[in-house]
Image (tube, rainbow, N blue to C red):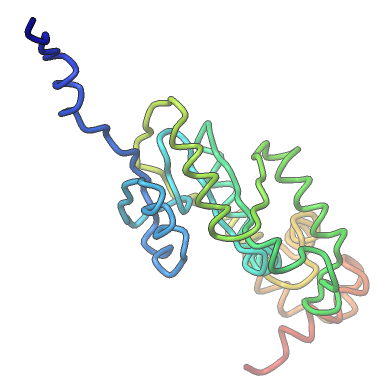
Length: 227
């Protein structure tokens, strides 16, 4: 008796399983994560993303190494990136490298930022902005998380993300918040008192002290210091 040919099994073998695609911001080319994703069998495509570093299906991911995470808190760049992530339903922040660099150890001595300030920022991300955080050991661990995420069923999202545009009041606050120790509350106090950035920079140390106390000396010193 001749064996029965199973034409359906042959057809299945000819169908190639479609690879999951990860869209990656071109600035991530220097990272080792993309090459690791290829090793996991994922298809990658580099693009100039306006928001986030990685997009996998319907999830956008902002990736930070520990050192970049801390420096971006200090220069307030990260706060702007967090606001841009808010336009997406599914977003995720990955802080990479906790195996290689401690997040809190001697942070105040090395970079002038108290460990509790870092903890407070992490809590704000979770509680105020509702963005999940993942801490990975290294680039391989980061790629592994993205690989697992690629296997979850979900729809793809459009790539027409918008960079956050500030109104005039927010622009003024953003400039002032670039100074050390000047947060949203203090920047608003200064603008309510002096009305313009020009009046703030022209104000005396004594006048500034009435609004921001001891921080007036630091602000005045930066304003007057030559490049």
